[in-house]
Every structure is written in structure tokens, then in C-alpha cells.
Length: 482
Image 1 (cartoon, rainbow, N blue to C red):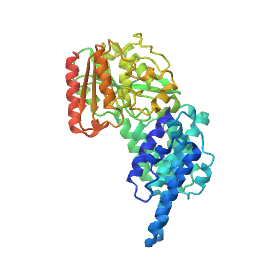
Image 2: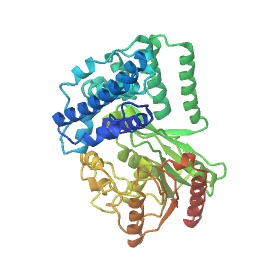
Image 3: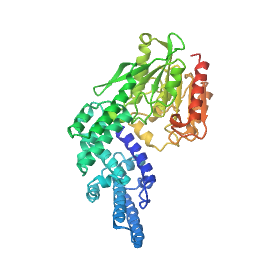
Image 4: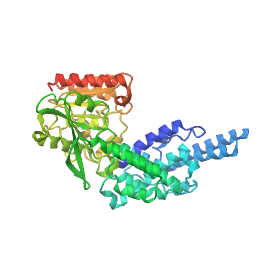
């Protein structure tokens, strides 16, 4: 699951980069590649090559105006890197968009890549070259993770794999250092300062610049500073790595014993760390609720061992079992989450604390939280608004319906507050409204707050949406008697 989710995020970033990149290679965009991904390989290779040739022909016609030779050469290189990036990414997306049982490698890819020049400081300035490098590194790391037993355990697995593969792409030492530094910094920013001993050792052995060392050290210190004054306790172990719950206490608790909410961060199950939170956790703390932030197995850190359904269930069971020693009211343990974390919270509220391997069968045998607060959650990954990828990933763990909050709806569920942007581009407002309506018909309490005109990440940037969310949380806590 980790590899698949990572490459989807990689494609999204590539699409943005392609949209921002200057002409001439407008035909070789990631949206265009995705549109061709369902074709058999031979047909894709032909059509993708035809687009490249059309862009080159357009370039040659423009050259009749005698542009500088250096500009013409650079434009050709942009086209070459965009074409190579599409060839690298096609095998995964063909699997994703079709009924293909596995990802089939392209036997002619090596010939395409052999035509590319080694990456140097000049090429590093080209967005297309950097996007190609990201795609190629991801593909090499995916293979390495599947074959290297050392990468089947421990932390920061994708970072370790990508650094091991970095030397497989022709580049100068300067570019190796730049990319290695970027990978480490991105890991810290996206997933926290976890599992860095081995990667930092490799990096430091190459004698990075003093400014880069200071920058990475500062990023590690800033991440670890979030632990100051926070009680942390292990709740699960995965691949020899302990996972922790981080207990954040409000300055003024609402009651004794204190109500509490688990916090499940977002990141498409691929990235994110326990302290990433748009508005929700601070709003809960300000209203006197204990927040128990859950360290989840992201795909970046744990690859195929990533199992956030089991993480959230185990975390809820652990807090429930240790409520007395945590000073928490066992009758008021809720769950909150954003994006993929919101989807986990919604599943926990409907399915109950069932590990991924368990079938729910819509039975009430699994305990559920006392209440739920979600933002930007995907309420029905089986709906027509999804592209089928979710069904393919979930199907590897069992019946996809076991992982759809909508499919798990029944009577007697805990009260729910859902705050959702009307222009959410990742999790459909239509699906959330459908979920809320069906749940109410079954007799459950559901409050759906629409943030008009905002997108998925409104909690990070949309002041009006943030205020709406804070007000909705305060009102829900009063309504629930918390």
C-alpha cells in the first residue's frame, strides 16, 4: 500500500510542476499521461512517442525564427525528460487504472533512459529534470523495497531506499548531495524526525556543506521540540519500531475525569506526523478536552507494513484500557481526524475498533468511540466519485465494504460532527452529505457544517473556515454534554 499511495502523491506533484512549466512540451503533461494509462503498453508507447515527436516538430518550426542554440537545446531536453518521466510512471498507472493484477515493468525503458544526459547543476534548474528524477527514484526504491530484506523492517524505509538508489541515476556529486539533502529534509517535514540514524550517517559521510548540516539539525530540533511537556507512551510495535500516543493536556480541563479525543492526522496514509493538525487539536484543547495524538504507520516510514486501520483501533483500545491512569473519563473518549485521518475516525465511529484483518459483518461487537469530529473525510471510498483505486487497495486486505464508513452505517452510532469544504477536491462533499442523510435516517445524530467555496486544506489557510470549525466544535461539545 505504501508504494502505491506514494506514487499517487508523486503524480499529483508532477501534475502541478507540469502545469507550471514553460512551453514547449505542453502535450507531454501528467494529465495527458494519465489519460493514456489504460492503453496496452505498445499503444501507450506509440501515442506517448507521437506526442513527443509532435512537440519536437513544433519546436523545430519555431526554430525557423533563429532562436539561440542554447535555448533550442534546453527545450529539447525538457521534452526528453518529460517523455522519460511518462515512460517511468506508466507501469504503475496502467495497473492502477485497469484490472491488471500486477505492475509490469517496461522492457524498453532502459533504452529511453540511456539517451538522457547525467544530471548536473545546469539540468537541476529544469523542473522537468527534477520531476523525472523524483519519478525514477520512486520506481527504483519501489523495486529495492520489494527485494531488500533489510528494508522490510525498521523506520524511514522509503528514505533509506531512495538514498540507496540515488547512485543508480547518472548525476554529478553536487547533484547527489543536493538531492540527498532534499530527501532528508522532506522526510523530516512530512513524517517527523524518525529513523534518521542510518540515513544521516550516509549523508554525513559524504561531507555535506556546513549550512546544509545546520539546516537539517535545525529541522530535527524543531520537530522534536513538539515533544516538550508532552507525555508519550507506546501503544503498538511495527517492524521493530514502537509507535507512541502523545497526550496533550488542556490548561483548563472541562471536568474531572477529563474527556479526551484521539487525534488522527492526515496525509493520504502516506505521510504526516502526530502534531500535524489544522485547527482541530488546538480547538479541543482550548475547550478543555485532552488530545491523544496518535503516531500512525505512514507509507513513507513503514511501506507495506503501513496499516492505519489497525493503528487507530489499537490506539483507541489502549486509551480505553488505560483511561484511569491517564485521568480520562472512559465514557467520554472520542476520535477526531483530518483527511485520511478523518476517514479513519469515521471508520472507527462506524465499524468500531476492528483491526484491518477483522471482518466487521456490521456486528456491534467492536467498541466505538463516544463521539467523532471529522474534517475533509472520505465517507464512501466505494462511490462513483472514487476512481476504483481505493477498492483495489482495500481489496488486498479483505472485503472493500469493511473499509467504507458508508457501507458500515447502522443504528446506534455515536454523535458525529463533520466539517467539509464545498469545493473539496479529494473527498467528495456529495459523499459526505449522502453519508449524513443515511445516518440520520438510521436514527444517528449527525451535524454537517459546509465551508462554502473552500478546498480540502481549508483548515490550514481559510480564516473563515477555521472560525466555522472552532465554533462547530465548541457547539458540539456543549450539545454532547462534554
